Length: 222
Image (cartoon, rainbow, N blue to C red):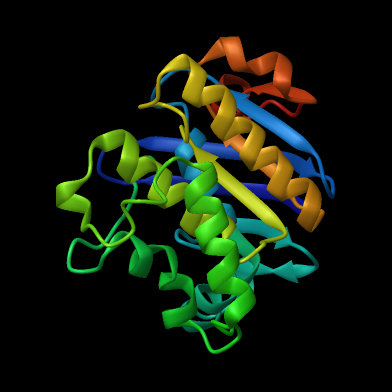
């Protein structure tokens, strides 16, 4: 599902350097990424999603070399193939929760907002506990509710790859387990892989593999 080779990336402002000789994620795998703040975990997700471009190296997702696509093609690919739960949620306040969930359908013609997609969104929202809040705007929702909207948006397109940046960070312990169950259930139905950044070590036994990302900061192959 994901193959990264000889990747290098840096932020010139603070001297941050990320070097990944090799990294892979197979179809359907559930991988948790841990590591200290500033080690580059979120940066990797953004590189895989095509939000950032590497200085060198190859990033391939579902057979497509994302790092070689134009900006417009990367956006379309991300909307149709990748579900991304952003750490800051990235919701648009001028849209309702329902409209935010449907946002991927607004930005790419590769997706069709049909009856099945609308029904799937309703079911996801109900499973996440926000079925009665879909007409509210993000400013009228709590942080936890906003996070649930972001999760529904990531899952509604049935992506082949789910990228999660602290998807359960603002939730209580019971909700964390329920949301993780939902992520894994939807991933299993779509045959999708899950790559999740988390600081919550209590969740790690739920994943098939755990990677300490601090090793990549030093450029060590794992």
